[in-house]
Amino acid sequence: MHSLPSLKATQIIRALKKAGFIEDRQKGSQLVLINPHKNARTVIPIHAGKDIKKPLVRAIIHDTQLTVEDFLDLL
Image (cartoon, rainbow, N blue to C red):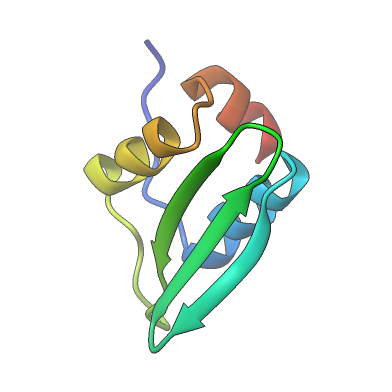
C-alpha cells in the first residue's frame, strides 16, 4: 500500500480529469465530478490555500473506483 500525500484540490481535479471525469456541477466550494463510463461520482472541496488531507484523498479515490496506484500515476 502506497502512502498518500496531502494534495491541493486543483491537483486532484487535474488527475481525475485525466482519468475521464468531467465537471457535473459546483455549488459554493463543492465541485462534483462524474465519470459517465464507470458510473462513478465524487465531491471535491475547493478551499484556496488549503490541502486536502490524506483520509479525504483516500475517500475520494475510493469514490472514483480507482486504485491508489492508478491515482498516483495520474498525478
